[in-house]
Amino acid sequence: MLNREDAAPMAATAIEVCASINGVAAATWNTLAGDDPFMQHAFLNTLHETGCACDDTGWTPQYLLLREHGALTGALPLYVKMHSYGEYVFDWAWADAYQRSGLRYYPKLLNAVPFTPVGGRRVLADTAPRRALLIEAALQLAHDSGVSSLHSLFPPPDQAAAMQDAGMLLRHGVQFHWNNASSGAGYADFEQFLASLNHVKRKKIRQERRRVHDAGIRFEWLAGPDISDELWVFFNRCYRETYRLHHSTPYLNLDFFRAIGRLMPQNILLVVARREGRAIAASLNIHNGRTLFGRYWGALEYHPALHFETCYYQVIEWCIARGIATFEGGAQGEHKMARGLLPVETSSAHWLAHPRFAAAVEEFLVRERDSVSAHIDELSERNPYRRSAPAENETPRNEADG
View 1: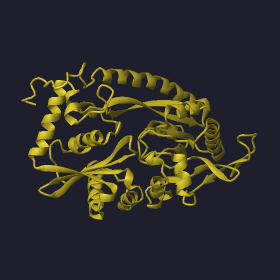
View 2: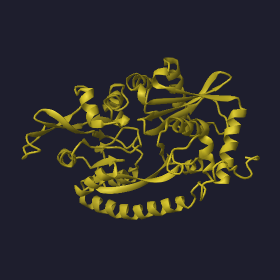
View 3: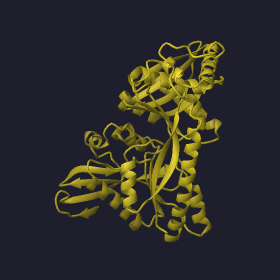
View 4: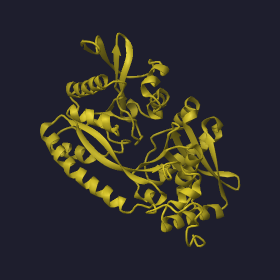
């Protein structure tokens, strides 16, 4: 335990290094996490309890818990990592450079949600001094434990800035998000969303949707309580098939899917595609009532445009119907722009113990940020939306062939 005595309001504080949050009351933890579904006790603890993120898979929990007079007032999810899989901010080149120099890059410390490239609070505390104390403690733990580095993935701008103030280096990337907006209000329906796109993109989406419909494929939207065990078994097959096709090993398992369906059903949307009544594909999405996060998908049959319909068009329709403000499409994928998602800059923060490598990485990140900024500018020039929205009740031109 790291102990620290400070004057009020941070009096009698202690920071505990915790290998499991099993002993932390879920309600207490969730008060810190707020409405972020990926920081909820159920989501994080289920990753550990089902063997997805644990010692055996190279994710050893080392959570920092901030206590004041015994009460939990802050937390920082932290992992000792023996590899860089499941992170989506790629540092393989850094690891390779360490190895070629005769140094060990692993183990390292990681502040992130395992296997989940979504933005959100990475330091769970309600005041800036508490957050600063936890960041300082994470850096101290990294220094004292002799790891090569400490990384925080996808923190919000204010927390990224606090990490930079504490001496960490900022890195920038790009994702693609959809926003539910039309003249300042949400879209009335999918057709109004289509009308906001330029003719080429609108026509392409209509063609793709028609292909799926003409193949006899129909869809259902299932909230967590409505997902049967049979469907979880089916979705797990779809999920594993996706990894098989990419010659990769799946990170999650059926026990995990079953558990989050049971423990946090209010946050789950499963889109199921059926042909002749038989389930053939599905996408799993997680939401908090304001933002929906597209997470995993898979199919047991191939059909042209089935992926786009299951993962984007059905999800956008659901968001419009429910008044969801934002749909985050996950990591990478410029093809998402053709489906109405736009580029958004993301951040991560990094500290490296070796001074020479830290200086080299800092120089690299300056160049990379310029490249990312230029890339976002170039992507923005390919904005799929109309320069001006069509007038109410206006029929977009040449739609008969689209």
